[in-house]
Structures are given as C-alpha cells and as structure tokens.
Image (cartoon, rainbow, N blue to C red):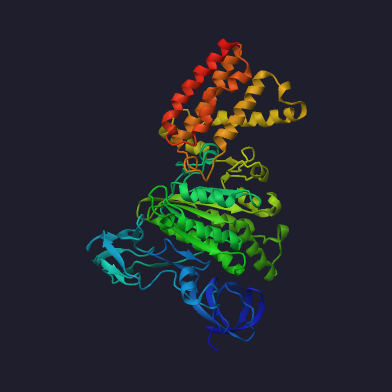
Length: 580
C-alpha cells in the first residue's frame, strides 16, 4: 500500500480513523469507495483522525482512504457574488440543476464556473513592477461591483505580458518576467488569515440606518458585534436590515446550522431584496453560505472559515465587507459533537476546552486594514448567538462577549410587547464610542456625543423610576419625574422603535437621528420651562406639534420638516403657560 492510500480503521459518526497513510494536519482526504471529502484533525502514531464533511452512514472499515496533498481551500475569483454555497463551497444551484434537490454523497463541484468567460480589462501594463496584492485588472462581475484581479500573495516581479480580453478564470491573463503566470482565480486555505500590511484603529463607524444601533451602540468598520437573543426575538431580521442598509459594499451571509425553514426564508427573500443604494438586486453584492442544521456537522464547522476567507478576499480589493454569521451557537454545537466523538476532555456544558480560542480566532479576522495594494478595506463581523432558552450565561454567549466590542442584546419581553428592534437598551453596550466620537464631531455635529450621553442617561433614570411607579403609581411622583417618564417614553416609542417593513422608517441617516434626538431634548427643555411657568403637565404633553413630530418619521421629507416642527412645538408649549 502506498503512503498516499490507507484504509478505514474505525467510524464514529462524522469522525473516521484511518491507518496506512501519513498525512499532514488539516490535509483533505477522500474517504470510502464514494470518495467522501474529509479533513485530518488529529494524528496518533500511524492513526489519522478525519472529520468527514458528508453523511458517513453505510461506509465500513477496510474501505480506502486517499490523500490529496491539499488543505481545505476555497476558489477565489470572479463569480463569487450572487452565489449560494454549502459549507465547503459547492454551488448549490449548480448541484440542483444536475441532480435535483437532494445532493448525492461524494460529489465534487468547483466553487467558480471554470468555463465561463469574463471580460478582463488590464489596468497594469508590461514593464510594471507588481507585488503581492497589486491590482492588475478589473472585471465587471455584477452590475454594481467591479472585481479587482490581484497578484496572489507570495508572488511579485515585473510584468512581461498582460492583455485585456475574454478569459475564463483558469487562463493566464498576465505573465511575469520569471515565467510566473497569473490567472483570475486564486486558491486559499480557509484556516489561514489572508495577509495585509497593518490594522487601523476602529475610528470610522459602520452606518446601518438603525437608530438604536447607530446612535446608542455603534459598530466600527472592521469591528465585531454579537447579537444574542432567544428564539423569535428578531436576530435574523436585524441581520437582514444590516445586510440591506449598512454602508458595507459587500455582504457575506453564513447560515450556519440554522433551521431549514429559516434558511429557506432567507434564500427566498434575499434575491428579491432591492439594494437601496443602487436600485438593483441586493444579491449583486452578496455571497451566501447555506448550511442548515440537518446537513453534516463537520461542514458546519468549515462554513464559518469558508465565509470569512471570501470576506477577506473582497477586503483585499479595498472593499468594506459585512459578514453575518447566523448563528455561531450552531457552529459551537458542531465543535462539541466532534469533540465528544474524539473523546476529548469536555469543558463547560460539554463544549470543548478550546471553544473560546476558536471563537477568538474567528472574530480576530475582522478589522479595517491597509491592504497589500495600499488601499483601505475592512471586514466587520456580526455574529448571532442563539443561547438555549435565551440564557446568555451559557459558554458560547460568554465566550463571544469576551471577544466582541459590541453587544446588541435582544429581549423576548420587548418582542412580546411588539417593540422592534427588540434590543434591550439597558444591557446592550458598545466599546467603540470613544474611538468614534471624533468622527461624529467632524461629520455630524460637534455635540453629537453629548446628546447621546443625555439620551442614555434619561433611559437609565426611567429604569430606576419604573421600580417606584410599579409600587405607588406614576401620579405619586413629583412633576419633574413625571416629565422624565414622558420624555423617556418619547425616546422609546419615537426614537428606538423602528419599523423594518415601512418604506420610510426602515432607514434613518445619521443627520436625521441626531435631529430626532435633539427634538426630544428640546421638548424636555421647553416643557421644564413651561411647567416652571405654571403650565400643567398634561397640556404640555398633549401639544399637537409633539404628536406631529412623532408621527412625521413615517412620512418622506421628514428631515426637511423636523426643524419647523420643533420650532412649532416650542411655541405651542409656551402657549400652555398663558392658558393657565
């Protein structure tokens, strides 16, 4: 038997032990007569432990195991966008066309269409010196995104020849003087982060158009966020809103171990979503990885790495990428299952002891960087966490919270009250505001951070007052505290609630968010004056202009009208003093 071929010794679900081969760690092998794809994850003397990315039922000891000499890699090049892949980058739509809705085992499929011709426009010319990451040409991949063809990492030299024209992704479009041929396609091992020059400080916000996120708990470009929440609290809708409205140019969505019906919903809805920035389908700048909970667990573990490698590739072109992982809990469950089959010592709640380091390894690949070509690019990672029973004290939520800088805590109680997005403003936080404050001062308003602090403080005070109200009722409070409760209610209902399915209210730009927050604080200041001047609270709260301000956010052109409405509100509140 050659050292490239061995046999199966033992099978335990997706974990197969082979003898007779001497592979490297993380090498891809073919298992059984059907050639199932697997990856070497442990070596013990002459035994190799393999996690198989496909269903292993029916294979038996003695069947062959063949080395490939490759690590698990993805194909990167024109054709990634608009695609829907499984966890190991097999294009699901292509597989459906050839074999129907059920994928057979052992099927191999290229991540990119190797025969399709793309129009390549050279931007470099013969005699130019190029380094790893240098952009040598562009391909108009979709209507909205141009694909920048780069020199693969590790290659550099002087261009001997380069030509524009129609090529497929494997044909050489450029030859260097040392004979190195460069095609439009690169291969990259998924567990290895792609190289860059340096990471920048997180001082530019990722603008999402969602008021509670942008204003109170902002995420920086290249930042990391966790969205833990129980079933039905709105994780998927929040991620869809981020995909649709955030100012990232590319979206990578990983449906990692989600229920089949949820994933179906995403796959049917996404292609119909219109990109508000261009008016074209949102799929034009999206790659999706679908790995439902009934697919093999090992492929679920790989899907997260496949997704982030694709995101890093677009980052290297100089794009801002938003990566949604929904949900990292299912990924951790896949690790737990494989770990138990490997008979490793379990950690907390049966998860492997290395859970935290794996989570950190994944989130650490986010960042805003200087690319090898000298451009700026970023990968922002937003991971949903689905804690059992909504209990965020469990290991995956806690491991995520130790790493991410933004915590958007979804609350089942708010969801039951129909308050959406159901993000609890008392237990959510962001560690980015200090780094971002200068950007807000320069680009929105010089007092933006102070306004945010006042709004947060009012919500905090309301939470304390609510405890008293539950005991004695709001009428027993002094008038100034009753006013505080009214202002906080205005923040909750007018500012923090946002209708994702309303044409106008679904998106608020930062200027409008600032003006709405100012309007609330204006109301508070004017009301205090009026009450001090003898007006009664009910008359002040019920002025028509305040109602108009609160309802106006559902009407287009609100941004132009809000200042006039605030001015009217001031006059109407002042008039309540004269009535008394």
